[in-house]
Amino acid sequence: MSKTLNWWPMYNLLTHLRDKSMLESTNELSELLSIGMLNNEEARKLYEEGCVTLRLLAHANPFTIWRIMQSFSGKWSYEEMHAFKIEDAMALIKKASCVYMQNKRAERGMQKRKMAKSVCK
Image (tube, rainbow, N blue to C red; front, side, top):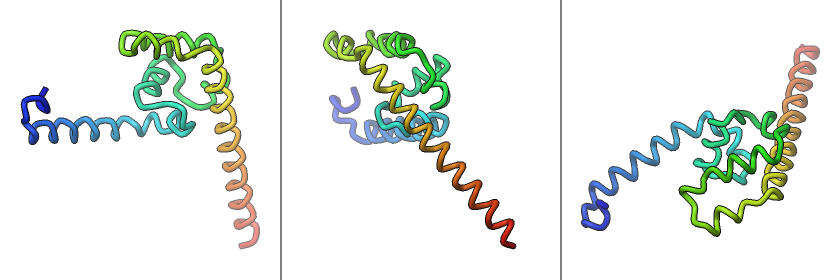
């Protein structure tokens, strides 16, 4: 509304505050956002529904994820609401599983390097 009234300082202030609040909230969502298939709003909804980690998302039931994503129907248009199919939920779970496993391998590699350094000292 402030943009349509040409209240640019108010518009800029509100945009800045919105972006700042999104940055602060993304800290808890960073793991879910690391998959690259979710925006902040979708990650927040999954987080609120109990998928708080990649591990939980990777082991989730595709129909549960599909149902959660369908709950956006009030905010999406008809086409967008029906665009998220069960195959999309399965792809999201597969991607979460891949990223989770990559993170786990990287973590193990770091632990091995730390152990090797401590043995060499």
